[in-house]
Structure formats: C-alpha cells, structure tokens
Length: 449
Image 1: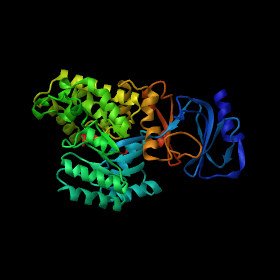
Image 2: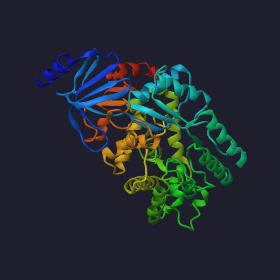
Image 3: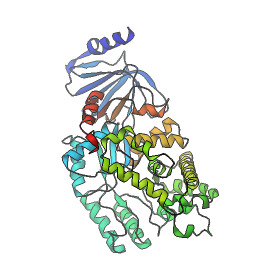
Image 4: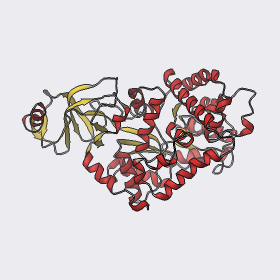
C-alpha cells in the first residue's frame, strides 16, 4: 500500500505549472552520493538538460509537469562508473554500438581509451554531443613505444604533435629507452599533456614516479622495484608483469615504494582482474562459461583460452608462485590505498576474458578481495575519477553531470549489488533495464559465430 501511494504521489500529486519535456525525475529513491559512506533515504532527484537540478526529500520536491518519472522506491541511486583502462577497438558503427552497449548496460558512463587514433577524436565528440550512443570518452593518441619512437627528439616531436591534435593524454607502451622516456616526460610536462600507461624497463618505476607520470597501469614496474639489490631477476625472466618474480621480492621495500607513489601524486590503475584470471587456477572451462562470453565470438574465446594456457606453459611458471604474486599484488593495492595514493578503476577491456563492462565489475570484486570496502572500491570508479579528470561527475549532487546508475539493492552492503542495474542515466538520458537488455540482445553471438 505504501509503495502504491508513493507511486501515485510521484505521478499525479506533486506538479508544477511549467512543462519540462527534457526533465526526468527519480522519485523516492535512496541516494548513495559517494561523497561519504552514507545512504540518503526517500529522496527525489530532478534531472534537466543533463545535470542534476534538484535533490530533496520526496515530500518537498515537486515533480515538473510533463517530465519523465522513474519510481525509485526501494532502489539505490549512485554515480555512473568509469572504466579507466578501456580500448576502442573499431570505429565501424556496428562495433562502436556493440562496445558502447556493453559498457553502458553495465553502468559504465565514462571510459579512458588507452590506445587511440585520429578517428577516436571525432568519436569522442560524437559521444559527447549524443550524435552517437556511447559513454564519455577520454582518448590517447597512438602509443609511444620501442617500435614507434626512434630517439629522444622523435619522442618529443610525437608528444607535441599529439597535444596539437587534441588528444587527452599520451599512452606509453614498453620498449622506450631511458633517453626516449625522459624526452617524452620533459616535453609532456612542459606543454601540459598527461602521459600514462606502462613503465619502460629502462626507466623503472621510481624514475617514472619522479617524472610526474599521471597513471601507472597494471602496477607495471612495482614488482621489479621490490627486488633485492643483489637479485638477478631470475635471469631477466619475470613473466606477465613480473609475476613470476614473486618469490624473490623483498616485501620490506613495500612501504618505501608506496611512500614514493604518494609523494609523486601518481595514480595507479591496477587492472588486477586481468592479471589474476590469467595466472590463477580458475579452470578455463569455468571462464568459458561466464555469462558475458555470450557477447564474444567462439574464435575470440579460443584465443583467450590459448593465452591462459600459454602463461602456464611458459618456463618457470608454477601455481604456487602465481598464487603468491596475486597475494602480493593485492597487498600492494591495499597499502597504496591505505597510504592515500590514488587508485582508479580499470580492468583493461576488451582483453583476455575481460568483456567490456562486465570486467569492470569483476575488477570491483578484485579490489574488495584486496581488502577495500565496497564503498572504497566504488570510489575508485566515481569520486576518484572525477578528481583525477577534474570533471563534473563522480557524485550525486546538485549541479553535477547526470551520469547515474539505479540499482535494485545497495552496493555498500555487497559489491555484487553494483551489477543489479534497474536503469542507467547517460548524460541525462534515462535508459531503463528493458531498453538496456534489448540493446544487449542485439549482440548475443548466435551458434558461437
């Protein structure tokens, strides 16, 4: 009875004299603002022109006449999530819509494209204007790496050119020499464009931190920084992000590298789920049966299985060392978080067993497994992202961008509840679960093809 009364109240009683065709009102909702670990019960949220115009108690906030009304009773409203290590794999319209659907249907309203190209600049603007359906996009240019850069002066030239072209940041890939990385960093800092990604072996994580690197992704270089001074690093073999060096690490060095990270102000995007599911003992048959693989071709799944099997076929790889590597990576994540060093949510998608959107939620699970609370894990994809990007999103508050997720249960109680999506608001456009599911249905792979 109470629910019925509230619905009638939302739909009929509280109105104003003006008509707002582009206004959406979420009535009687529990707000998870992410400004602190609280839930604000029985609130009404008015969204107009892509912004949160008003928030207040359900009994005091009027519903504008003609607006779209969403019943929030017993539901929870939180900011949209960001995937801070994504890849835009194609600009073919069908593939763009597929990728966008996978992200947005999972509540991912912002992505950071980690391997860009010129066509992504146009796509970024098309997403922003609503011309093309998709999340907000931050994009790098083509990566600077050992094959694409020929000397320090060339590194500096490419940084300047990418800045002039309008890319949001520079992507660093492996293989740069120490001089090339130094020139990249110096030029980027001088002209004001961030750079992010991998840590070249020739540079090492400590020098990268000292060079004002914006983000280090995958915790790249951290295990190498924890090796004892007299270690030979297993003859130079460390495996996937040095995980097979786990038994050689000096864990007493963790506080020092954490302190250096905090002092530098560099953020980390751990992509922990990517590493764990490649080296842990989860059977490939279980990975293949994940619900999200229905959106992936059988050929791609076979490639993913082969990649996991290759990890264990490599020399020096054993399950005990892999398990220790996971334990130590989780410890690094927790110690960075505890010290106040910035963490950003990112899974590296699409990538091996990382289906876009779905893998972001698996990364949240990994962060909780690393001893972050659900609230702390969710901050890495909301408040922290807004702080890092200096954007207008990340929290539910008046005047903020209306990129929101409506959930059927509180994500603060159980991180798995972040997947119980009743609807998504993308730049003020309300997308109910029925529409999101219909979009997803378009991209179910039939007969494994």
